[in-house]
Amino acid sequence: MKPEEGDIEEIENLNQDKKLLKRLKKIYIVVIALLLAALLIMNTNAGYHIISLLSGRIVTSNLGEDYTFALKKGGLVIFEKETYEILRQMYLDNQEHEIKACLTGYRNENNYVVEGLYAPLIYRQDVYSVTSQLCNSSTIVSLHSHPPLSCIFSEQDIESYGAFKGVNPEGIIGVMCGEETITFYGYQNKV
Image (tube, rainbow, N blue to C red; front, side):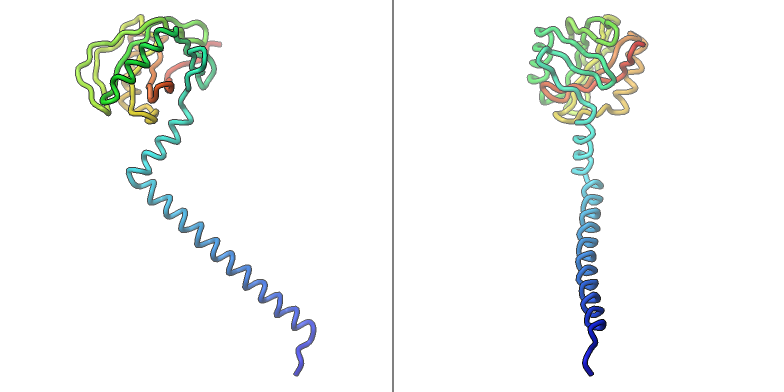
Protein backbone atom coordinates (compact mmCIF):
# COMPACT_ATOMS: atom_id res chain seq x y z
CA MET A 1 0.00 0.00 0.00
CA LYS A 2 1.46 3.28 -1.12
CA PRO A 3 1.24 6.27 1.31
CA GLU A 4 -0.83 9.15 0.12
CA GLU A 5 0.54 12.66 -0.29
CA GLY A 6 -1.33 13.93 2.83
CA ASP A 7 0.19 11.11 4.92
CA ILE A 8 3.72 12.05 3.82
CA GLU A 9 3.15 15.68 4.80
CA GLU A 10 1.82 14.60 8.18
CA ILE A 11 4.88 12.39 8.78
CA GLU A 12 7.21 15.25 7.79
CA ASN A 13 5.34 17.62 10.15
CA LEU A 14 5.66 15.09 12.98
CA ASN A 15 9.41 14.78 12.34
CA GLN A 16 9.78 18.57 12.39
CA ASP A 17 7.77 18.74 15.63
CA LYS A 18 10.04 16.07 17.18
CA LYS A 19 13.16 18.05 16.16
CA LEU A 20 11.66 21.23 17.62
CA LEU A 21 10.78 19.45 20.87
CA LYS A 22 14.34 18.07 21.11
CA ARG A 23 15.76 21.58 20.70
CA LEU A 24 13.35 23.03 23.25
CA LYS A 25 14.22 20.23 25.68
CA LYS A 26 17.95 20.98 25.31
CA ILE A 27 17.33 24.71 25.83
CA TYR A 28 15.17 23.95 28.86
CA ILE A 29 17.90 21.75 30.39
CA VAL A 30 20.57 24.41 29.80
CA VAL A 31 18.39 27.15 31.35
CA ILE A 32 17.61 24.99 34.41
CA ALA A 33 21.31 24.11 34.79
CA LEU A 34 22.28 27.79 34.62
CA LEU A 35 19.63 28.73 37.18
CA LEU A 36 20.79 25.97 39.53
CA ALA A 37 24.42 27.05 39.11
CA ALA A 38 23.44 30.68 39.82
CA LEU A 39 21.54 29.63 42.96
CA LEU A 40 24.49 27.55 44.10
CA ILE A 41 26.91 30.44 43.59
CA MET A 42 24.60 32.91 45.35
CA ASN A 43 24.41 30.66 48.40
CA THR A 44 28.18 30.59 48.77
CA ASN A 45 30.54 33.22 50.08
CA ALA A 46 31.48 34.08 46.50
CA GLY A 47 27.82 34.73 45.71
CA TYR A 48 27.55 37.18 48.57
CA HIS A 49 30.56 39.08 47.24
CA ILE A 50 29.23 39.07 43.67
CA ILE A 51 25.88 40.49 44.83
CA SER A 52 27.69 43.01 47.02
CA LEU A 53 29.89 44.12 44.13
CA LEU A 54 26.95 44.48 41.74
CA SER A 55 24.76 46.36 44.20
CA GLY A 56 27.73 48.49 45.22
CA ARG A 57 28.19 49.58 41.60
CA ILE A 58 24.60 50.82 41.58
CA VAL A 59 24.85 53.05 44.67
CA THR A 60 28.37 54.46 44.44
CA SER A 61 29.52 57.79 43.12
CA ASN A 62 32.80 58.24 41.28
CA LEU A 63 35.08 61.24 41.55
CA GLY A 64 34.56 63.82 38.82
CA GLU A 65 37.36 65.83 37.23
CA ASP A 66 36.43 68.83 39.36
CA TYR A 67 36.68 66.88 42.66
CA THR A 68 32.94 66.36 42.94
CA PHE A 69 30.74 63.36 43.57
CA ALA A 70 27.22 63.39 42.13
CA LEU A 71 24.58 62.29 44.62
CA LYS A 72 21.99 59.83 43.32
CA LYS A 73 19.03 62.06 44.25
CA GLY A 74 20.62 65.24 42.91
CA GLY A 75 23.21 67.56 44.38
CA LEU A 76 26.94 67.17 44.80
CA VAL A 77 29.61 66.54 47.38
CA ILE A 78 32.26 69.10 46.42
CA PHE A 79 35.83 68.66 47.68
CA GLU A 80 38.62 71.18 47.74
CA LYS A 81 41.44 69.52 45.78
CA GLU A 82 43.92 69.48 48.68
CA THR A 83 41.36 67.98 51.04
CA TYR A 84 40.52 65.16 48.66
CA GLU A 85 44.20 64.41 48.03
CA ILE A 86 44.76 64.10 51.80
CA LEU A 87 41.75 61.76 52.07
CA ARG A 88 42.93 59.69 49.09
CA GLN A 89 46.40 59.31 50.60
CA MET A 90 44.90 58.37 53.96
CA TYR A 91 42.87 55.66 52.20
CA LEU A 92 45.84 54.35 50.19
CA ASP A 93 48.16 54.30 53.21
CA ASN A 94 45.71 52.24 55.29
CA GLN A 95 44.62 49.33 53.10
CA GLU A 96 45.26 46.84 55.92
CA HIS A 97 42.41 48.32 57.99
CA GLU A 98 39.45 50.66 57.74
CA ILE A 99 39.92 54.38 58.27
CA LYS A 100 37.68 57.03 59.79
CA ALA A 101 37.63 60.67 58.67
CA CYS A 102 35.44 63.59 59.64
CA LEU A 103 34.97 65.86 56.62
CA THR A 104 34.33 69.44 57.65
CA GLY A 105 32.48 72.06 55.66
CA TYR A 106 28.94 73.21 55.04
CA ARG A 107 25.76 72.51 53.14
CA ASN A 108 24.69 74.86 50.37
CA GLU A 109 21.21 73.92 49.09
CA ASN A 110 21.62 70.30 47.85
CA ASN A 111 25.42 70.43 47.80
CA TYR A 112 27.84 69.44 50.54
CA VAL A 113 31.05 71.47 50.40
CA VAL A 114 34.07 69.76 52.01
CA GLU A 115 36.79 72.20 53.06
CA GLY A 116 38.86 70.11 55.46
CA LEU A 117 39.10 66.87 57.38
CA TYR A 118 40.39 65.41 60.61
CA ALA A 119 40.83 61.90 61.97
CA PRO A 120 38.90 61.28 65.20
CA LEU A 121 40.27 59.20 68.05
CA ILE A 122 40.27 55.54 66.93
CA TYR A 123 39.45 52.93 69.58
CA ARG A 124 39.76 49.83 67.39
CA GLN A 125 40.20 49.08 63.71
CA ASP A 126 40.74 46.11 61.43
CA VAL A 127 40.14 45.27 57.79
CA TYR A 128 36.37 44.99 58.33
CA SER A 129 35.56 47.65 60.93
CA VAL A 130 36.61 50.81 62.67
CA THR A 131 35.39 52.07 66.04
CA SER A 132 36.06 55.70 66.80
CA GLN A 133 34.94 58.81 68.58
CA LEU A 134 31.94 60.53 66.96
CA CYS A 135 32.69 63.37 64.57
CA ASN A 136 31.92 66.86 65.91
CA SER A 137 29.23 69.31 64.77
CA SER A 138 31.49 71.00 62.18
CA THR A 139 31.54 67.70 60.28
CA ILE A 140 29.36 67.64 57.17
CA VAL A 141 30.30 64.05 56.15
CA SER A 142 31.18 61.30 58.61
CA LEU A 143 33.22 58.92 56.46
CA HIS A 144 34.93 55.59 56.90
CA SER A 145 36.37 53.07 54.48
CA HIS A 146 35.42 49.56 53.47
CA PRO A 147 37.57 47.04 51.61
CA PRO A 148 37.87 47.88 47.90
CA LEU A 149 34.60 47.53 45.97
CA SER A 150 32.59 46.68 49.14
CA CYS A 151 30.45 49.78 48.92
CA ILE A 152 27.24 48.84 50.72
CA PHE A 153 26.46 50.32 54.14
CA SER A 154 26.20 47.80 56.95
CA GLU A 155 23.49 47.82 59.58
CA GLN A 156 26.07 49.22 62.02
CA ASP A 157 26.87 52.03 59.56
CA ILE A 158 23.20 53.04 59.49
CA GLU A 159 23.02 52.96 63.31
CA SER A 160 26.14 55.15 63.49
CA TYR A 161 24.46 57.55 61.08
CA GLY A 162 21.59 57.92 63.57
CA ALA A 163 24.08 58.91 66.28
CA PHE A 164 25.85 61.34 63.93
CA LYS A 165 22.50 62.98 63.02
CA GLY A 166 22.20 63.89 66.71
CA VAL A 167 25.47 65.84 66.41
CA ASN A 168 24.78 67.47 63.01
CA PRO A 169 21.27 67.09 61.53
CA GLU A 170 22.55 68.47 58.18
CA GLY A 171 25.36 65.89 57.98
CA ILE A 172 25.56 62.74 55.87
CA ILE A 173 27.72 59.63 55.99
CA GLY A 174 30.04 58.16 53.40
CA VAL A 175 31.83 54.90 52.73
CA MET A 176 35.04 55.13 50.73
CA CYS A 177 35.45 51.84 48.86
CA GLY A 178 38.00 52.81 46.26
CA GLU A 179 40.55 55.50 45.57
CA GLU A 180 37.92 57.50 43.66
CA THR A 181 34.71 55.79 44.81
CA ILE A 182 32.45 56.81 47.69
CA THR A 183 28.88 55.87 48.61
CA PHE A 184 26.86 58.53 50.44
CA TYR A 185 23.80 58.08 52.64
CA GLY A 186 21.40 60.38 54.45
CA TYR A 187 21.11 63.31 52.09
CA GLN A 188 17.75 64.87 51.34
CA ASN A 189 17.14 67.45 48.67
CA LYS A 190 15.90 70.82 49.83
CA VAL A 191 12.82 71.92 47.99
